[in-house]
Image (cartoon, rainbow, N blue to C red; front, side, top):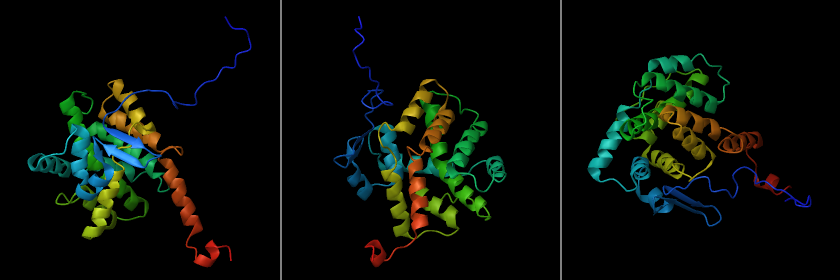
Length: 251
């Protein structure tokens, strides 16, 4: 029975609430530790490729050569995006937010995958392979569309990192540059149960299908309190421009 003197309090968001558990990744921000399936991110960044890390995250172990070759070939076979999706993107306002474009384009991919709504492991895996191969193509295509350039078709002889940079600029990147971007993809591959991952898991729990779940995850990621914060930081850096040492010191 309440005496009327108690103070009620509610947690903000899900802070301190165990909403789900994940054995895929572990993040300790205070200690600067990031673990994928038991492997320290520093080891993976130094010795692995993004394709290997995807296999690790999906299967709980690193692949052997045959398994890696098979997954790599599957990704490369799915770089191309339906022409209808690219045509649709060309109708968007060129000042559209890239994350909004990505969200809409990824959602539309569902129309061109006849098994996209199937949620058994085999079909979900097939949809995940397609999306992993196609998202870079969409992102690169939008950058060229919004700047008035021709869209460059993907090159299936290149890795995911190499192909993205190639489609973005129309020339093959040098090995060091491609490796740098590959490491960036590794570092961003999994950050435990963050907002977009949680959103994706909720939608997946309704058996909505891979495309619906990933679309919802992109929508959450775009928010300024999640991945969208990067956009604001970039805008700030562009506004600042370059500063010489004397200006940084206030002289």
